[in-house]
Amino acid sequence: RITKGDELYMFNYLYHFIDMYFVSVGASITFLTGLIYSVFTPWGFFKHGWLVYKWIVTVFIIVIGTFYLGPMVSKMLQIADVDRISALQNSYYLHGERIGLIAAIINSVLLLVAIVVSVYKPWKNWKVKKK
Image (cartoon, rainbow, N blue to C red):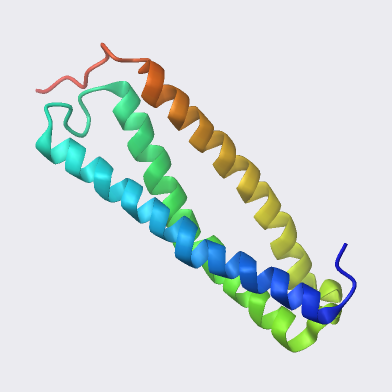
């Protein structure tokens, strides 16, 4: 349990650091490898349902992370830096904590399903029909 302002700031600093340098980089690399596989293999972008699912999940996580969660995490770090332990009384900060927890659970489930989909390839025979 965090009881001091410096602890709260360090928690947010590490959260921000992990988000910016590991999660964002990992998501970008995942997107780029998917792009490379889609362009340079016969799998393509939309030939199989399991690939469509993975594209949707990957793009969804990157867009939400980039335009909503990333700025929120940065703002929470700023609040923790200025307010220290009083940040726990800040409504934006508390809302960000709840949203961060919910987003972590949703992202984890989506990524676990993506792993299962990658291994078992359901909808393997489903193909987008060309006109």
